[in-house]
Amino acid sequence: MSELDIKNIGLKVGLEIHQQLDTKKKLFCDCTPIEEEEFSIKFSRKLRAAKSELGKIDPAALFESTKSKTIVYYADPKSSCLVEEDEEPPHALDTDAKNIALLISSALESKIFSEIHVMRKTVIDGSNTTGFQRTMLVAQGGYIEVDGKKVGVQSICLEEDAGKLIKDEGNHRFFSLDRLGVPLVEIALDPVEGDPKFVKDIALTLGRLLRVTKKVMRGIGTIRQDVNISVEGGGVIEVKGVQQLDQLEKIIEFEAKRQHGLKIISEKINQTEFIGIDRKQDVFDVTEVMQECNSKIIKKSIEKQEKIFGIKIKKLKGIFGFEPYSDVRLGKEIGQLVRFFGIGGVFHSDELPNYGIEGIDIKRVTEKLDIQNDDAFLIIAGEKISVGFAIDSIINRIELAKNGPPAETRAATQNGDTIFLRPRPGASRMYPETDIPTVKVTNEELVQVRSNIPKSWEESIRELEEKYQINNQLAEQIFDSEYFEIFEKICSKNQNSPNFVVSVLCSTITNLERSGLDSSLLNDEQIMMTFELLGQEKINKESIQIIFEQIMSKKVNDVLQALENASITQLTENELDDILDKIIQDNTDKIKQEQMRALSGIMGIAMKEVRGKASGKIINQKLKEKIQNFLN
Image 1 (cartoon, one colour):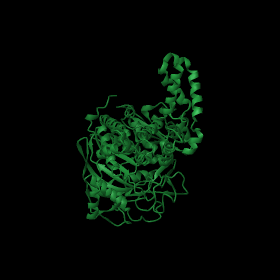
Image 2 (cartoon, one colour; image 1 turned 60 degrees about the vertical axis):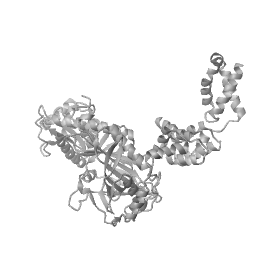
Image 3 (cartoon, one colour; image 1 turned 135 degrees about the vertical axis):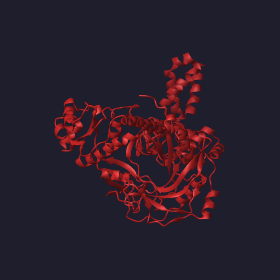
Image 4 (cartoon, helix red, strand yellow; image 1 turned 120 degrees about the horizontal axis):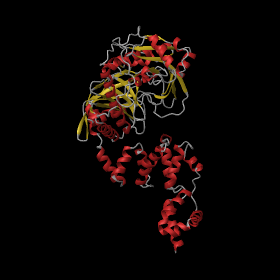
């Protein structure tokens, strides 16, 4: 296994940024997009692939329909209506969303069209009740400048966000409709030569340009990157749903390694005499010969009376387990593919005997399949219908492997890898929306948005530094964070130092997240109330971390419960004196030995003991005096 030289593999990366707009209503109805926890309505649908006007079926839609899942939707009248349930036609396009899209297009110097046509884009994974997503091309062209280089803009679209996936279990997939229909702007950029760090800088710069408009949503899930990645001689891979910038760099590096590895595998296949797989002659029912197999997966399938098949692959012995880079194998690609048909796994001959499949089982299968010395084989088990679809996909995938990485859509994982999602969609997935008339863009509207183009990010940061008397690093930190609006709200009360507020919002919360706590449980009202209690001197600075910790660890639901649960009450001066005198008493040897140097160690002990019940400043002051008196 060699190391990858990322600069010499013809890596190209194109970014698509999806940003939710802050319009207080959805794109084609008047519902307010509020994140819901509980839903009062539940209904289910079956979606199927239909032909386009040209009589073609989109490959991605066809792939999804082979899984034949039932989609269950959860809704609530507070955040969705009959439009989201597809029981009523869409209302008129929200003008605020249209104006924000025009503003962003102007800021990127894109050419705005005088007429906007609403289109339907086929989506049948269940995330849209209609089976399509409404989208409209607003502008094309323009650029963004990053590190002194111009990166071209391909297109700017205004579209609806999809429903939120709650869980995917067996033959059912569950979505909530609170996010469906939220206005999104999608910005697709020209591909750039693949330096992962530069791509991350592009995403950061574009994110900042969107935030200075002050008309976009902030927080996890409100901005998502889709990344188109390819290496020389391979198809374009679209990776969906990258939410964090650090994850973006890792995903590009992972995909570069995976795709280049698949290219090396394709070269190895082309050195063999492999000519393909015949569905009729090379696929065998091996259920009978596997009856005594000890593999848990095989046993389970036999109990459920499912079918077990063997696939003969002539001349490819050693190819499925070959690893040009660590963890990049054709066998792994096939394993990910079959999972989407609800099949537990697929075994290939390069990894056997293993997983409870023993030498005697292999002998029976090789005899049944008439396996020769340089042949490989796969064993797959499951329900007859889903196994049939899976076998077709496997054969197709192995044959595509001759040409390097095939074009496909993959999903980003939290640890920076990607997993197979579906084939790439075709051109026939778009068709006109018949329920909404053409949207005109007037010259007056264009003049209006051009006069409202916001200040640059650098100017916005300078303004922040002056307004709040904070340094450049803190200004950048708070502006880039999801807590910017709440920061401005807290500081408008003039009760707390902006420096301290930034430190709590950007460092304290981040540190609690790093220790595994969930910041999504902490909402703006709770943050605001905590700072108000501090301003009224009902709590001290040290209590803030305790309150946030209580809420983020699900021990309590709100600030008042946190105060009660952690028994955060302020000590009277006499109570504090008694505690500090006892600490000094217990540490007299330390003080005699270290003199005033003992202060920091004793301060640590005191802070632990009175955690959140007295201010650190007062404790420090009192201890200084008490140690001085003791030494005198």
